[in-house]
Every structure is written in C-alpha cells, then in structure tokens.
Image (cartoon, rainbow, N blue to C red; front, side):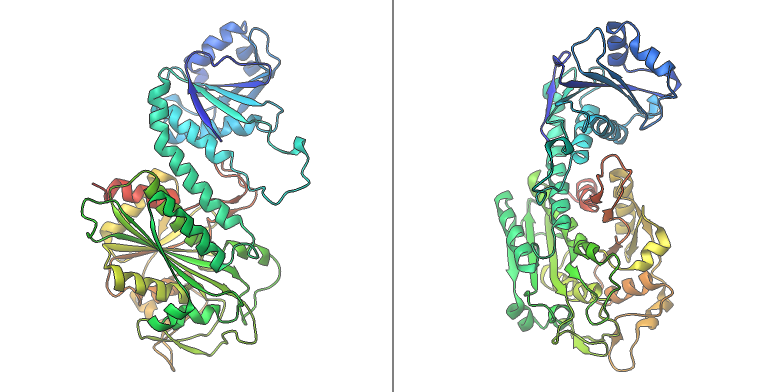
Length: 494
C-alpha cells in the first residue's frame, strides 16, 4: 500500500473516507475538532448517540456527512491521549484502514496535522501492515469482495519530515510482508529449491547469498539435517545470507538461524490429518530470518549479519528416516531419532553448528516453530525464548517490548539435559512429554559450542487465523522480523 503524506486537508472527494482521532475522557485531536466545526457538530452528536468512549479500537462512522466533500467520516478511538505513542499510532492507522477497507471508499485520508513527523509515519506503517493480503491464487474472487481502498494519504504539518521518518518503516513493512508471503505459500509452490531461488533474488538489496545442496552438505557431514529430508523427492538446501554493513567487513557478525521445514507431515511418525494443511507454516522461523536480513539490507544497517536457513521437507517415503535410526551430525555427535516429527531440532543442530563453526559470530539466535509444548505453556500471544547469555537475553527482551513481537523467557534448567541422553547414541531427539519445549532447547544447546545463543520457539505466534490484532490480518504474522531488526538497531549497530 502506497502511503502519501500531504499538507492541508488532503482535498477529499465523494470516494474518500476521512479518519480523525479521538481519545478517552472526551479529548479530540485538533483535526477532529476542526472537522466537527465544519460539520456543524455532527461528530460530537454521532458520538453522543453511540457507546463510543474513545478507547483503543472503537470506531464511529458518519455516512455522507454534510459540510465536507467526503463519502464518510470515521472517528478512531486511541485510548488515553498522554500515552498516545508510536505503537498507539500504528494501531490507530491500522484501525482506520480496517474500518473502511471494504466500505466501497476508494481512498483513505487520515488527518494528523497536529502531530510531529514520527506518529504519522508510524500510522502509515500500521496501515501498510494492516493492508497485507495474500490473494495471488484467488482467480474467481469478485471485485466487491476485495478491499476497495486503493490509496492512502495522511495529512500532516510537515509532509517532507513525515515522509523521511516513514522511509525506514516502509522498508521494514516490506520485509515483514515478504516474510508473510513466504509463510503463506503452499508447499507445492515453495519447496526447498524454489525457496532458495527466491532468496537468491535478494542479492539486489546488496546481500551476499550462497546455496548449499545435498552434495555439499553430505561433504560437510550434515547427517542430522539431511536425515530429515531423505524421504522427500525435493532436495534439501542450506542457504547462507550475509550483510556486511559494519565499517570492518571482517568483524564478527551477529547471526540468525531459521528452521525452514517447507512442509511437515511428521514423517514416519505421521501427524493426525486435522490441521495438517497448516504445516506449510513450519518454515516461519526461516522466513523471519529472511525478513530480518531484508530489513537490515534495505536500510543499510551498520552491522555485519549472517542468516542461515535450513530448508527441508519432512515426508513419509520408502526412504524416509525411521524411529530408532541413528544419525551423525556435523559436530560429530550422534543422535538417536526417537520421533521423526521432532525434526526441526535435527535441522537446527547442523545449521547452528555450521553457523558457529564458519562465522564465529558474536551470538546466534535461532527461530523455529518447534514444539506444541510451547503453545501449552504460553498460549497464542507469546513466543518462548531460551538463552545462555544474560546480556543477549536482556537485549532480546528489550527489543521484544519495543517491537511488540512478544517474548517470554523460559528456563534452561540444567538437570533437564540428562532427559535427552540416549542408551545407543550421544543423545536422542526427544525427551519425555513434560517440559517438551525445554528439552528441545536443551537439544539445540548441545550444538552451540559455547557461543552466546538464544532459541525462540515461535510455534505460538507465526500464524494467527482469525487475528484480532489490527496490524496483523488473519494468517501469517511475520513474527520475528521486527524483533531481530530492532535487536540489531538498538544494540549492535554503530
């Protein structure tokens, strides 16, 4: 969605929906007060006739308003005015768009002339996120079923300043939407080699990208990752993304590693059929890494960063990995495969080891839709984070609060490590059912080789059917992109 910043009243037409902001305790933005005066008090009368209190997300609509040339006016509740910050502005912009996107209005004009440049910029960012729609395979959808709003303008005091403030945010929105696209693609379209091909196109942003196939991974000894994909007719891939933005191109990078299981049947340990179609999302961790690298490159971040994607399909074939198989990882450690549906950690084992072995990074953060156990523990709004380094943990939690990609720190409880000891190999890929997300993290930790490391189990947050978050349409969320970008910007650039 193209966002334009304009001066004055934006010159609305009959096809325009005009949005103004209102706050709790009867407070109105200056633009709302001026517009109400033009409309002879119609806004205040409409509010008095409704249950509108100005709380966040409330909306009042006035159709065919007298006194102005616009098809409708919408009043957007924004909560308490003293705490109307950048996040609140994002929600306000998203709520304004969502209120009129299917109304028949062709344009949205959001009036914010009394605000400085930053809040309108964030309102535009919220609109860009809210307007995301994955519809490339809808060939018979009628025009009246599609969003009608095609243009958005935000009226501000200083259009140039707001446009400048919005530029970086718009690049971040593009990165988040790129990640959402990857997660939304069906598995017959986005399989490992096609995924790698798409990522290689991002060299246009200045990223350096390599793709390792099964031949190269076999030579490296990646038996853990390759074992997951051996039942698929699609070749597994390891994608290496590099952004060299620091003054010293050889300085140790920060590193992100993503689980990219393009489809997860569970393998021989076959999943139940209900909901299996959502296993196209089992590569959302890798999509977050791609989106983060996209964001860093688009704003020319002053940091060296590495992104590693382990891309596989987990399929039940005559050649598929069996429960009871023993594989040898790149680290030389052996793994007894108890459950082939605990495949993501097997992918990450080799990807994480490869990352630390080759790049010697400052730290590693891996992201994965890893366990159902984290859903049981945290519900649908929080991703679990496990971390071996207190500084990294504190930085991640701060970035979480700043970005709204919500994390909750989970324990790496030492005695749990023995729960994945095996009688026939160095370890087994699952422990007992209790504490399943913790033992999964303990498994990955064995491949970090002492490097500062965090594991984000995002099975809770990657996909939101029926989303009620204004900036997240139902489906893929793009979780993790904003988190990693903020982590880098706030703590590791300079």
